[in-house]
Length: 287
Length: 259
Image 1: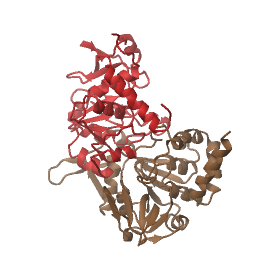
Image 2: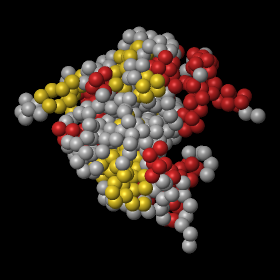
Image 3: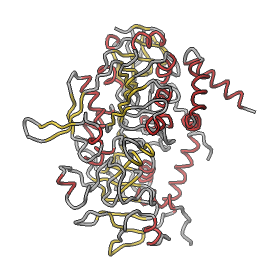
Image 4: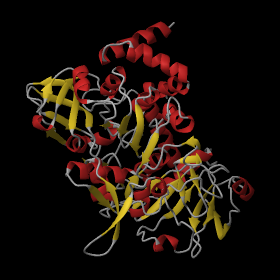
């Protein structure tokens, strides 16, 4: 049953050291505000799960929050590398990072299996890739009817699923629309679910290509305007591509990265302050 | 009338775009494939159906998406479906004619690496990874690959097999139980390659205007071969070039990067 509460309280209550935490968003509705709160609260030893880890995973990895990531594509979309992810994998900084690496099809099926309360997912896939040499969780199963051999991956059942969505009503029913990715599967496959939203409204005014996550399927609903920034929330704001580009320089150097996180994340109390802090840094830099 | 001037990158995108027939259902990778597929849509193939892995089906973006899930893809699509549905119903379901992919490394049998340079466990360079490519390459009717050609990208031996092409050549792909035809076209900034009948080794079938065979050899990490009937790629038409340039300029303006 959804509790409408502050993000700080939701993370404190539901995200624990050592948890497997899925923070999804397929380039849309990426839960940046929630990721920052995990960094602020200093969670450690997390297994972070996402098909397409990008900047918020780079930040969590660079701050040593993660022991392992489960993923299929890790990059700065349209820009290039994730330097903190690369530093962790290539040099073990700030700590070694275990990789459980899949394809998109494998992970998408694994989330569906988790949401469906099945132990594993079956797919036609992984037929000609070295991923199977390094990930022993990609296995095969024989069809009992035809004898065909199919790929099998274990269901994803995160301890915590974290997503951002457009809005909720006062009961905590959550509306998601646009590119919905795996937002529903993440919430339903997870033991606990946190949803940040742009706003709480009286009437969801459900548009086309949308769905509603009922309040009883969610644990915490937290209002975080701009909570998916610098990614976008359809109907609210667009992707801020300047930040994606600027992140390349910030993240390239360990000390620059640490100083940035300290000033803008650790020394701010929430996402609104974080965004204000970036604005004042930009104003300082302006002539 | 003199032929319009063009860059090797423009030639690559135009040549790649021409591969997509009107009405084709195409699963589009981000970057160069997305550029080529949209150019096809804006020129000779207005009925091409573009599908992106984030969920948009039949999308008609007026500017290039920066990422695989930009809002412009959702807003201009016939429908937007959940990401798992793209892979389960539309790709695995057998509805895709062409998978259009990019790559960091490719070998002579059209096998692709987008995972690591160096050893997987101790990589020199960690690349983004597989994304949707392994299953796109397996399950699309055929695969087109578009990428720049150079000795570090056209390699004798892949550091990691992310996405299978013709594997060790011959009928190795079929023996692995893979249904899709595999990489039937590789389009680069220098030439077009196609798998040779029998061996399935990629051989040069079209050389872009002004490119010498030696330049292609120097840009390839294996002893590349040329088809007996190798021909010259037709240069970009004025319409193709104007459409591509206008599209890229519109994209730059939309993303606040100046014209």
